[in-house]
Image (tube, rainbow, N blue to C red; front, top):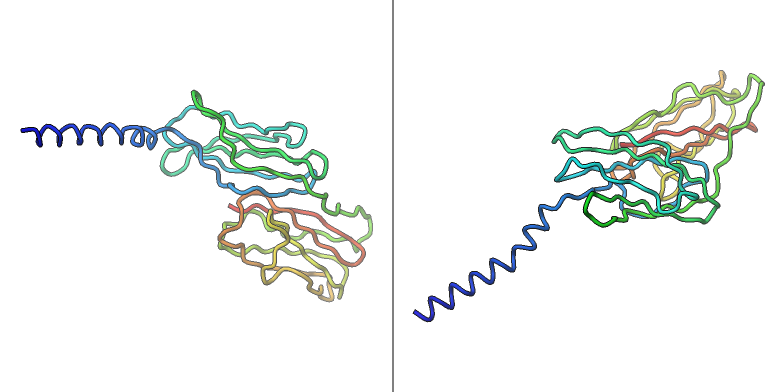
Length: 222
């Protein structure tokens, strides 16, 4: 009889011990598609995707330092499972080297830090020119899913070397297809490169330089 009583007590204690874990597993939370800290050129934008699980309450999404990161827009949507999704777009407006974290807070919970953004040196600006030989974007890369191929084409000076550089949070892309190519006799040049499956989703800067001109554009990965 005593053995049965002790076994019942032990089972009850194990059950009570597991309760906090069970409750914690059902707590609502916010998942970010960006979990590592990175740098963004000054005056460039970045979009992060937040997915809310376990609740339809609106999270408070904020930058830790509003003088470093400026909120551009917040768009709400739903994923295939019905979870609320927020696309939070910010602009790196602080001084070069300054940092700010991005936080989300659900009602009744403490703030959660997802990553830190560092403002880096600005990229080269587009050169304004009225000459017919200035670089013109014929087809932008647009929006490309990770693991797929991005393409971009321009029109510039004939038989001229043009260099395309793609900037990711981890640094310039080293993918095959980016780099220097020579325009044809009509000034047309194009590039195609594969977006890595681990590329951080969001907006990424692109610069094309050649013939004494520089064009700045961007594309988005999802």
